[in-house]
Length: 100
Image (cartoon, rainbow, N blue to C red; front, side, top):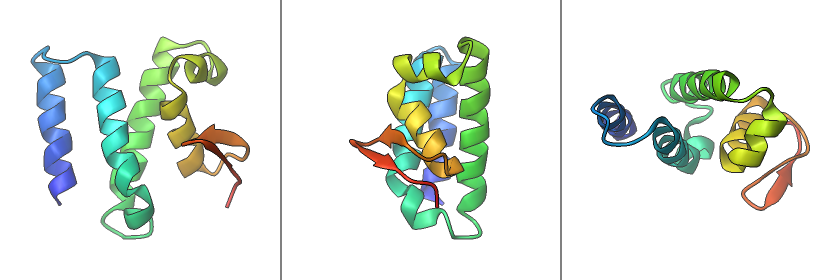
């Protein structure tokens, strides 16, 4: 899957200090977000979404005291997590999503 190779390359960049952790998660989330709808129900795609969401949540939880504070700093990141988790009422991409 080409997206996995892209994420691995992005991981190499952060590990080499070429980009910050914030940049890693912002770029990576945008890459994964762009194909979320297409792969969320695909058996090989869902683990990628789940793993990215888990890593992103761990990162935000370690950096911010709560999701509200994280949302103020990174609305797209928190919005995407809430969207894939089915949290209702969180604005993401210019619209509010309802839980599935």
